[in-house]
Image 1 (cartoon, rainbow, N blue to C red):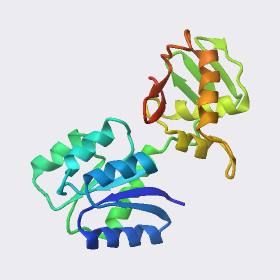
Image 2 (cartoon, one colour):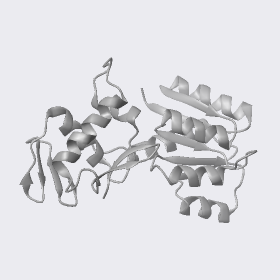
Image 3 (cartoon, rainbow, N blue to C red):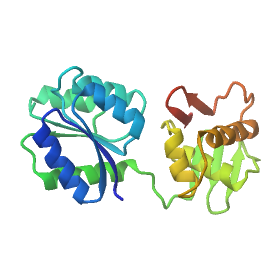
Length: 225
């Protein structure tokens, strides 16, 4: 599957067209008709990308963009009828990855979405991850902290490598489970917390006051860069 896309659009017809087109190309599509629905869906689904209209009732796209950027680096592509240069500059400065004006061509939306996802996804060919004093050598499967070897179990290693692949990005329990545990596993958020605890015991100066593996309350965990 190409990934999960959250489409935030108050016009039902535009939302349906985008949803059908991207769904037929392998994307899992989640829809929201206004800003409040968008933020609830974002927290629940943790999408790989967001297609965001700016002019919406209740909570507009500017506020949604600001809220998403406060917690995630996930690609956000603005799709709107607003074509003023000031709006484009404002959206990009606020953290939007791209700006598409209506009426749009579906093939162009797809191409821009694919490009944003390619830029965002970590390079799977990487063999070394360095975050401050932490270094992971994926060829040798070794971890050092300030030059000191840190022995880890395979699951601890995979979890740490995931966090190190995008320092500063918040990973939810759900995403960690999907990417670290095998499909069909009965693991739960309790297992994620347990392995976070084990990693902190091995990596933090004071595991009760973590400085490296940080909890973002209500959202998940990140490796602090």
